[in-house]
Image 1 (cartoon, rainbow, N blue to C red):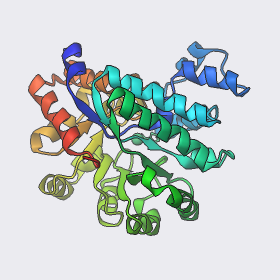
Image 2 (image 1 turned 30 degrees about the vertical axis):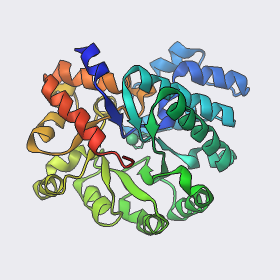
Image 3 (image 1 turned 180 degrees about the vertical axis):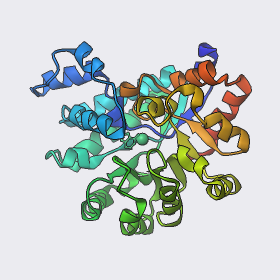
Image 4 (image 1 turned 180 degrees about the horizontal axis):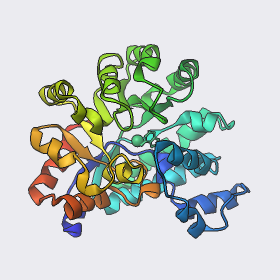
Length: 316
Ligand code: HPA
Ligand code: ZN
């Protein structure tokens, strides 16, 4: 089944490039950039990948991203991810990056963007993987800081397809960024947002009604609100679900309790994604394989999930 799932053509619509930084590359970049690390070796770092919630993960994820400094680093990070895509027949990807994680450390926006975009271009030419980049705002930071980040992005608008919203969800509702998203959409960007991962269904309503998003990232808590479920089904709003992430961050206590197949069977346009594969134990195929192993996902269901991912692309 693993080989069959791996060969299935699919798109990945929820992937944080910083979350694809494998421990081996993290250590190599730390050495290249003379960054001191608090972990003795790769094994010790891997052992630290045990989280009780989103925030515990984010603390480590931002710390890990500290080794990324040069254009070449961002190129290498993105290229390593694209090679994984190639190996798993991911034919299209729409990755996120978090510029503020880097600009707040003094790395110029342009350095980050140029490295990523060069790799995406080489991925298109050398690996045949199409892509569209999504600039994600950090929701634990202020609206003003998000506005500044949008200002920095405008001279490079052709490099992006959309803006997104990630980081600590609880206490940071989508409404906090309504004006930023209004401006981004007026400038021609599409919009997506993380909502309903740890946050309540109300945040999903806000993301739809105030941020006017095309897709909901995660969205698994939609099942708590029947009226919301009906809307998501009626309007065929895609959900970019990340099963292994949800288990690692204790959104569900076990994969056998995950609701993705239940949503699929109700007619929700759910897709399978890896979120932060270096931290959560696998790329897209591993996420599909976990659904087969623990929820009995059939080949027919896998085909529908993969087709949903191709249908839900922002760039066609
Ligand atoms: N949720 C919120 N923010 C994130 C995530 C996530 O799953 N991954 C990286 N940043
Ligand atoms: Zn995410």
